[in-house]
Length: 362
Image 1 (tube, helix red, strand yellow):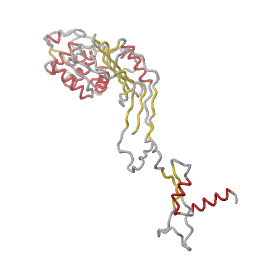
Image 2 (cartoon, one colour; image 1 turned 30 degrees about the vertical axis):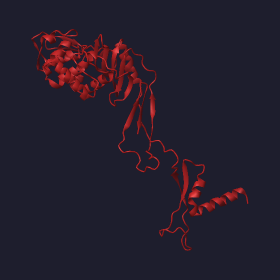
Image 3 (cartoon, one colour; image 1 turned 45 degrees about the vertical axis):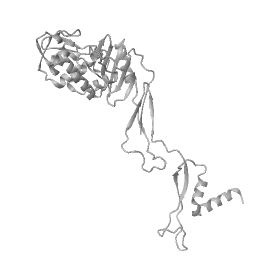
Image 4 (cartoon, helix red, strand yellow; image 1 turned 60 degrees about the vertical axis):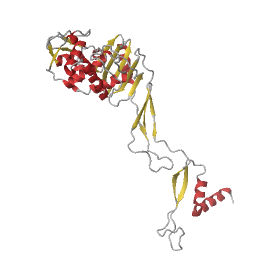
């Protein structure tokens, strides 16, 4: 008898002997880890495995895959990292770019570093004024408001101005005098208004922002971060009136003053939707703004810059050149011994650093 014939006989005997199923399965799958091949026999309705002389021939056994309990379970998801290439060279001490639709962090440099925000904090001043006042509400100007240093539109002490004009002056011309006049109109004092600004920032998701002034002039204890500024601006742009006002390059007040937007990105950088600049000696140059190209929108913020416009251009180009992170889903596999499988409702987790972004489905 040849070895090949002997092997075939052994296989036939193993298939015809149900009592030895475990041994047979182990023998057949010896080299098949992580799956064992098991033979499943279909028994007649009576539940007996032995065939009677008059019964039809038993069906051929079916071979199915059975997980090896000792093997590692398949991963529930595949993480696909997006390599965004060389990082932009910028002078800013802290900066961040986020996807305006998903909140994905595209780039970050020390984004939670607290610092003086300078005039970028006027985003909150303008937003609160829009939310609180009617356009034709008259805003009186106190001696304190009129005496604010530049930038200003030189409001006259004792005179009242329409709120709509002062809001434009704050958002476009970064007027310090108009900021304080609005604050006093809304809250009675700049100090009380600054407290409202802090609460509004927290409501918007900017928990590290503390306001002490309505115009961003340097004050002890006042702070924000690049991440907070981006979050605040992203939310403020959901207000249609705010978004429409801050996108204008020029405006003229009812009392004849011409206002020119300080945000040069509107006419120098493609896709600018609006933004706010700032500068003080303590803060250096600061900026927050939104940009849109085709179907993608990004929000960027930077603080402590020495070459702000160069930084903005590089960050914008980097942000739009970066591919979106992708999520690769695979069929969930329950861990060994756990028939319940993965927890229902588990959402995607965003994993980020300053160079790569990945999304994993957990």
